[in-house]
Length: 172
Image 1 (cartoon, rainbow, N blue to C red):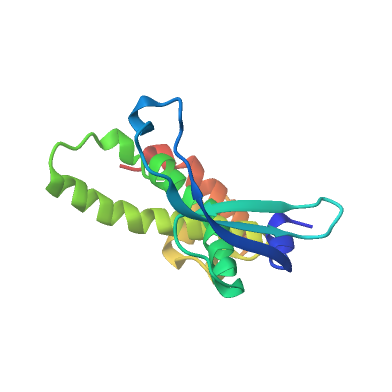
Image 2: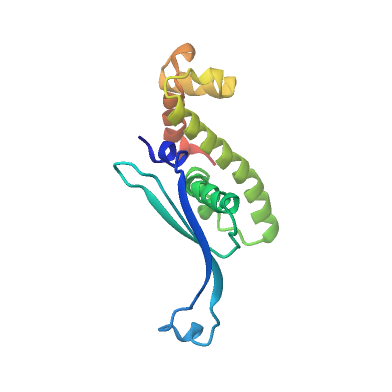
């Protein structure tokens, strides 16, 4: 069973509040006061024994707030994948922009492109054999199918993603 499928059924949880002391061996934090924090522990009684112990700086005072903390944490891989799309798919780090205006413009465009790349990956992962033209832009499917030498009506979501990735280096 996948981690995401298992986590949807994690019925057991505990939570509590305490104060966390800062690092003692770092002079920058030596005089710092303890920080209020919540500890949330969730687990599933399975063969793998999946368990998460989360430390949060916001209050967790009931089961609903504990599960909200867990749900936010579940999104971590999607967020990581989005940033990966920005870095590798959009090559945002290579832009080396020198003005805030240029960075804003690039961020707006690249953010949309990264979201589409992430969507493409999710569809290909969830439904690899789905015909690409049923979910992606028809013209994009036509261009990628022609470049790959695949008939449009045979181009799968997985092939669409692979062909798009192959052409990533030729994107501006």
